[in-house]
Image (tube, rainbow, N blue to C red; front, side, top):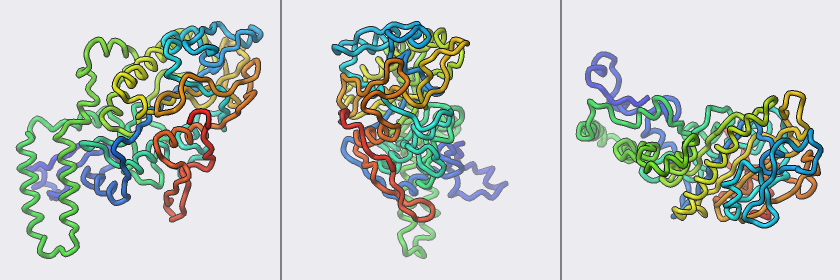
Length: 422
């Protein structure tokens, strides 16, 4: 929650004036100024045009043989109900429910031969690169660590999906936890009606005078540094940049219509455009153990609309080389259809969609066997996809950060990227 110092409450509770500004959305009860100080203490790196990542999570595990790796010549109990359609790249086809992506395949690429490391719904591997990910930071927290706070105090890592234990900063520190703009966290980006910007500045001035009383006994420069970070905290609240990025009403009606039903894709575009380094979002629930095909008939067109609108917009705004988009689930689904009309968990093969970031588009990489059961050539693993994304945004996956014991840890242990993409 956001707390602005209240004179009456201060008299009753004895709360200190220094604690007048807090925002819980950035992790626990850290004050916003504390968060900014912590970020500066670890030392973020920046570049004039840092790249960003949008990770689209199809939680539950989407069926690869019904999306990007159809098998029209397989027996009926394998091939399913959908037909492949050609894309605008010769020799590449996708599901008939992806007509918008088919028309823009020169801006997309898919890796069809990725094997997951586990077959349950823990999605740690796709976020960290480790199956047993306890104590490993997720990719968004790594981006936060490297990049630091964005322009106008934009948080470097924003999570638009449901909470997941995979989305934790681990030893990188709570200041690198994702900002989740929902509920109070979103409301708290606005000043309370009773506190105008002028009134907030008055309180800032008063706090400055209290600090002046101690400057003669502070010989370390600590108070001066605290002023710097407190100033950033004020600027973040007053600038409203985060709030505006999350306000879809600022988009024209035609744009909002293009994203109808998949508004998180539009939010992700606005966030990276405003300077956020990593955004995660989810769409649907892909655990289709039964009624696989009715579900896909409803949700694959939504995915098609969201992906095509997002990629089109990134190109239209000149952001296609600055933003990497990756879409995947925890694993694929069984090529063999079960007796409930569904597909079950399948870790030996899955498809991963990628776009932008200067990666090579307009291709399919790898292939699975005739029934889609496992990789036939160019097999890859989940950490290699993450390594490719890290390379695209200029982060060396061999880089190390010290864990809580002081031991240096690589971002990834399996660091070989997908060379065809680079």
